Length: 247
Image (cartoon, rainbow, N blue to C red; front, top):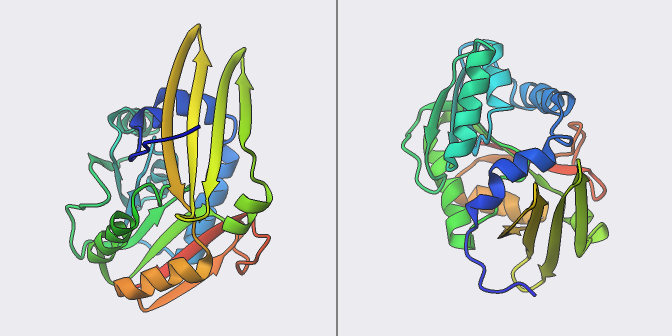
């Protein structure tokens, strides 16, 4: 059904993505995530924050509205333009940069780095590890990295090979398969919108907490903690897996 995957068709993360995910990425959900980031990272005045794979700026702009020094980096120009427009309309200042998380232009710059809404795991394992290495290098001594990804046990429990999302007479069909040999979920996305049909594909690497903890420790982080969606201790049935690693 799905073959010849490479990373990762960027077209699946542009306008159609925002259109169909708009009802999921509500202001209330975004504020919940920002509040949790404050709490888990103990963000203080004057801290520098990198939103890594910042998308359209829904988290970065909220952090900047509280007066923090925020940089957002994403590979998708469409998202960055949306982020800049939103920042301007809300009177906040964020440094938005187009770049690849596998090769960051920073060293010892940030107190905190955040990577939200399953924006980690889209490469092969060597490149996924390089993302962690680059984040480690970009952090100041004592800095923290927060990664918000899916809880793998929930992925397996709730796995749906075909999922249809409808909005205003438009449709997004996601056909997925799980590969136990690579621990990846492969997805083909078919968009039927305004009389046009578009296709894209991507994969996401899944992690158990012990595995990603070990990766982070091997990268050089001194301590790794796991939490659920509301900041509770991570458990098998947690809605999300939020990992906080200290340099």
